[in-house]
Image (cartoon, rainbow, N blue to C red; front, side, top):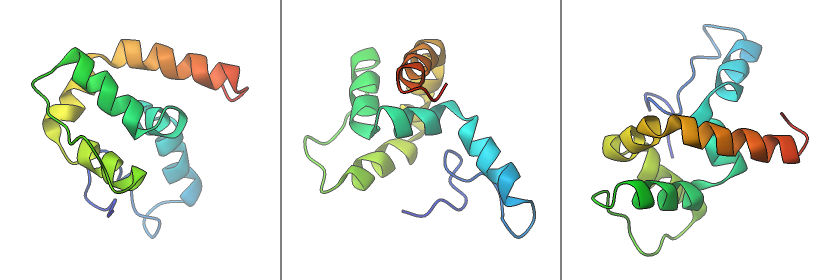
Length: 101
């Protein structure tokens, strides 16, 4: 999956800014943290529960394919953004349990 030009996954160019800045942007991003700490299948279910009109496949060949199916779809990202408070609380609780928050 290509991150370049993906509004969810592209945090800048390592040739134009320090790597630490790019990494910090990603680390501060709610959707990236949700993918990292909860996974794309959790996000798929989170979206489907809150907006059943957003349809998903029943099976994916890999976790990367499931993630790409979410981050490439504006309607899926819109649901996550609408429910960002709930998602943030969940991600922060997981990070705290893992000692990473």
